[in-house]
Amino acid sequence: MSRAQQGFTLIEIMLVMALVAIASALVASTISRNSGGQRLRDAAQQIAMGLRQARTEAMRSQVPQRFVLEPGQHRWSVAGRPAHPIDPDLEVTMTSARELSSDTQQGAIVFFPDGASTGGRVTLARNGQRWRSDVNWITGEVVLQRDAAP
Image 1 (cartoon, one colour):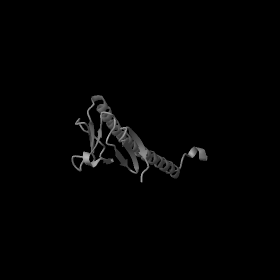
Image 2 (cartoon, helix red, strand yellow):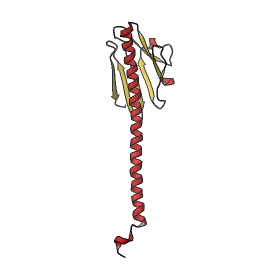
Image 3 (spheres, helix red, strand yellow):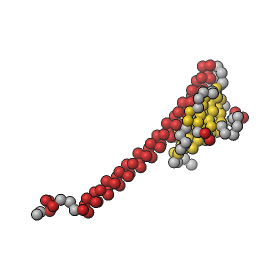
Image 4 (tube, helix red, strand yellow):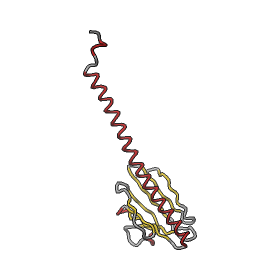
């Protein structure tokens, strides 16, 4: 019998299987890493949307509106409406005026009828990736951006 008719050796089959396993593991880890990054970005976009909603509602109703973040409970709310959950795998921090918080477990940003705000920053992080929503205290503008990890 010639070599072409004999088929593959066990070593050749095992080598191909090992290469397929390694490639599958690389693809799976890339997908897993990207899905975590996507969840982080989606959560950051939801918070930025909530901040913008509070600003818009303050200007529409001519009544100041509060955006409240409770990092320990991984949730946020606008003006007493039902709270929105934040993925518990994310690290949540907020910088805002200390006088606006009713306790140390939450932070708040207030938006005024003229569009201005008390200003602040909400940062979400996971596995070295960070997104932050900055609120300008003069204009009330909300800017969402990916942040370089420290």
